[in-house]
Length: 148
Image 1 (cartoon, one colour):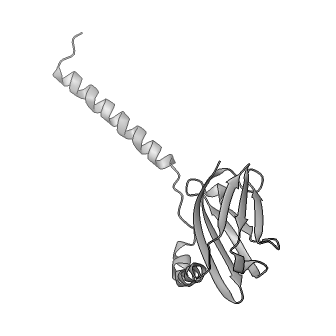
Image 2 (cartoon, rainbow, N blue to C red; image 1 turned 90 degrees about the vertical axis):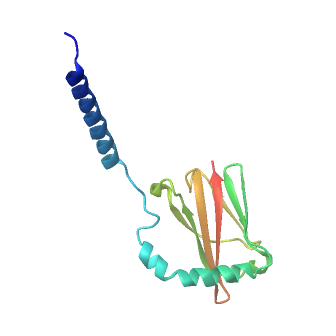
């Protein structure tokens, strides 16, 4: 049986329909991560982040981050040694919200904190959001780190 133009056209429409059905199925099954579940609430409080970032810029140096041997070494600026009242480090993973981790900022007397990657935090690419309070002022710093 030879295929005439009508049969070929019908096969093209069937193939197109199957392709569209596959694409629709795949798009429905794709998970999309939001930047934050409380995006609008955080946006309203963003002026505090701007002020804290300006305070951090007045320090002699920024927080020094060094990744080696599956450990992240965090060194506070000299004027922050023994002055940190409270703080936190938020490991934000844009690719996978399940890897997001929130840790307390607890530097030792020399202003250093060591975080084990693989035990405390999963290896991935992160946006580190570090905020802390010292002497009644808030400070904020962001860094991008590839922790593999």
